[in-house]
Length: 251
Image 1 (cartoon, helix red, strand yellow):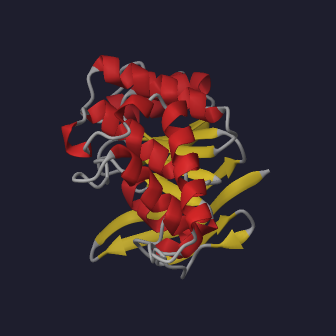
Image 2 (cartoon, rainbow, N blue to C red):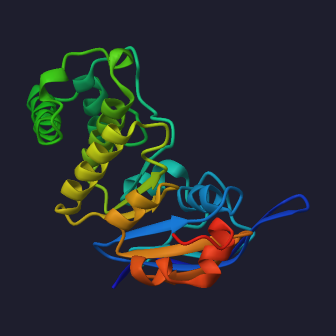
């Protein structure tokens, strides 16, 4: 069963055709990777999914409902959370405070946090945030100011901020960009651990080690459209993909 269905999506920016008849389906509970060279339209497609960009044509369905015309916070509340290439976190706050903010927003809506929320509700939110921090090995850093954290730990924190929102679908835009190999490996292990929660994932990533370690299905984009789709093994062996992505070199 598909949790995300993208059909015939197109988007132009002036004379530039950023997306051209994109068709893509994500099965529930799987990891679906989108790869391709720079300028292929990958991030533009993600922006269409979260309401930052409105497609000129086509349909986007999530969990049986259309996403077109819905505002970003409405899409988030419907069950889609996004991890950006550059972590979007509150640098002057502590790790625990960062996780509690989206937890409150989940119940109060669009980050309109109710300061009169009952003490029992505040305690429940804190308890859930602490549980997620423990699960993601951030418990010892819960009182640390975020600006002093490493890039790898900031990525771990952003994932915690997404998980506390109880997403059905997690969108990850180059989650290992700029990381050392050690941090990349740790992030892969963390994402594999998160997979046990049954959350569906769409991941955009240039590191093929990350892609082939995580993905159940891989879609390849070039010049704004999907040129191939299959399992990691099928994509590795596809000459068309090798030509488009690595100039004929083997993946």
